[in-house]
Image (cartoon, rainbow, N blue to C red; front, side, top):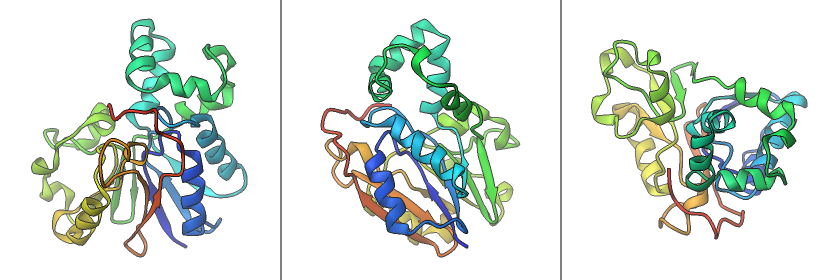
Amino acid sequence: MRQIAISDIHGCNISFNALLDQIGLTTTDELYLLGDYIDRGPDSKGVLDTIIGLQSNGYRVRCLMGNHDEAILKARNNRPFYLEWMTGWGGEETLDSFKTFTWEDIAPEYWRFFKSLELYAEVGDYILVHAGLNFDMPNPFDAKASMMMIRDWYKDVNYDWLDERIIVHGHTPVTVLQAETLLEKIDNHQVLDIDTGCFAGNHKPGMGHLCAFDMTNRELVFQKCLDDVSGYWAGR
């Protein structure tokens, strides 16, 4: 049995399935998805269908919430934010993948999926979270928004609180080389960013890959983006 983490798929369903094939996921493995399933990429609905299909077919898949997953829930009931989500977050591409302009055409199973998402998971010596942890709090798990949104937090890590655990996260895109370097230093720094900017390869050299981290064997696996993201931009 392996324990594997993937983050920030962002509507790149072809790349996601190719990465699953590359790692040879089986029903004995545990797959942890660290959020941001939707927006920007061309097939957010397809990504959700892949995840729900895996769960329905006996694969052990545990899903965390990213800021983009929280955003679709917020946009559904907040008209001013809906306009921001559509134009600034990649929401238009998400609705396009459902072939709709209205919330009413998105089936209840997808809303149930978003509402079921967790903020973090503790797996052996690993803490899994979408964005990171806010160490200004005595208990970083109390800072719920930070777990989805925080950036530039490495300098604040409280190693007494962290003890020997390792934080695995996404949210802030890094290059493949940066991810590999973080893995080399993981025993000292105890952090690993696995968001290698799947949708952002046209904007940022060294990105444009979806990354899986095999926590059991401490190995990174990269899949070059296969989806058409030529029209998407690197924003939030």
